[in-house]
Image (cartoon, rainbow, N blue to C red; front, side, top):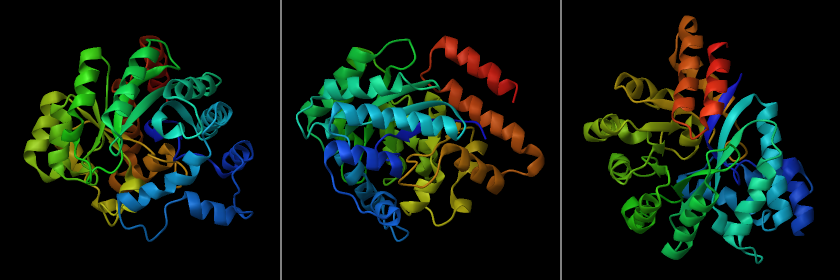
Amino acid sequence: MNYIDLHLHLDGSISLKTARQLAEIEKVELPQSDEELLNLMQCPKDCRDLNEYLKCFELPVSLMQSKESLEIAAHNLCADLAETGCIYAEIRFAPQLHCRKGLNQKQVVQSVLKGLKKSSIPVNLILCCMRGSCHKENKETIQLVKKFQSRKDYSVVAADLAGAEALFPNENFLQEFGLAQKLGINYVIHAGEASGPESVISAAWMGAYRIGHGVRSIENQDAVNTLLEKDITLEICPTSNLQTKIFNSIEEIPIPQLLQAGIELTINSDNMTVSGTNAGLEMEKVLNTFVEPEHRHEVYKGFLFNALESSFCSNKLFNKLSEQIQNM
């Protein structure tokens, strides 16, 4: 199944093969068995919440601390995406997490972009500010979005705010996104995942172009109204939401209610390795759970068009992908 993935974390999507390749570069010792390695990189079945889910990023981040490993990680992920049917992706990561061995954020971003530019499919990059980081580091990330932003593909297209949402509310980062507005750059914000609909409302009023997750919007009519008023699309990641215990089953995810309310949705993976999925598999789960067989193809194409229309791709690529989706 062809798909578009707009919510895809680089460090959460490093395959086992890539991890072993990077470990040789970074001189990191890994378990010999793939099963043991997967246990370190994939969300445990007894995961209790988002904070525990985020611990799965510790190992892959440690494997991407050099120019070479960052370039390889980005390139290999693009190859994995192409192999599984992706036709366009916006990959995100936090450059400040990859400066432990002497690289600066600019060098980190340059290395990842170098890997992306070898991709056989069109991809763009989103740079994440981190909720647990200082304002100085986050502002540097915002400034790098401006520096590497262009209207061409294979560039930095937006900023993001990621991390432990319940511990660090959106309002703590007004400085960062005030700077983003001043610089005229696009940004998305993780919200309505670990925290409730009030987080979605604040992200919307802070100027988010899209909202990562946002599934708890349905709990509050003001949140729904705000999304509609500001025409904000949600990046839905079903399996991730189950693993972080926002919902107990896929049937509980309020996708039909959000659609009925008129909110535009996209279906995404979040993290291909940590969550053990890809956006194509997530799309199949959603269609099989919520849509009658005779309507699935129509709804499928609708989700793809939602993703395309809320993406940051160039006009040229938009037209090409639009024609491709129309002919599916």
